Image (tube, rainbow, N blue to C red; front, top):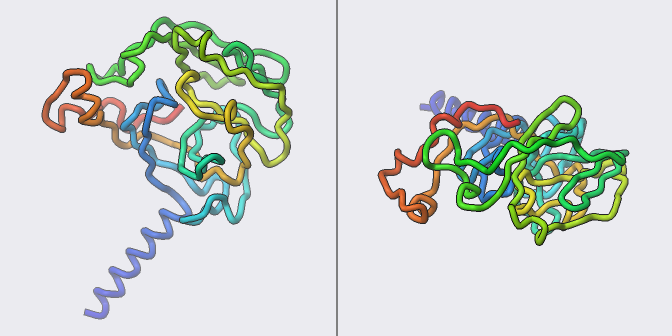
Length: 236
């Protein structure tokens, strides 16, 4: 009996240590990272990459690395301390400015090309919320890394320009991939790098919510809402 208790206790301590130091699961809520991440995606977050982020805190107690541009990270929002997911656009020394929905990095617009209208998730009829919106899909590139972003067709009315800012040491400029449905550095400013909990690695589960299915007239059993083809995909 005593040995069993020791074994169970050791397993629990190991699981807690893994969650605190190494990995954590995170569920995507809302459309702010579409098309890269959809509402209902669940991702594995590597916490060990940047520092030691303890539970019930709003910043890392110890850091040993910083995110790089294009990393998709989980961070504590500087507005309300909830966990949010964003893409890193600017790091220390970068000059960032947003004008008319174009992001300028170090004086040059981030290269991008149009891919066409927003389209549903390829897994099934269950896609992101963007399939219900009039929006366009674009590909941006920083260095050699390419990723997709969405813009609403009425984005001219929703534009949020920013003043040029040089990102200081220990700070980050972050954006959501759905540029017209994201609360990010355009609104709350730069984010201290020690508020980053970790980098999103891959999608381990994905399903549409029952409310979303009902809103689309796609009611069905719970398993019909699972997006199997998104699972085990790396977060780009």
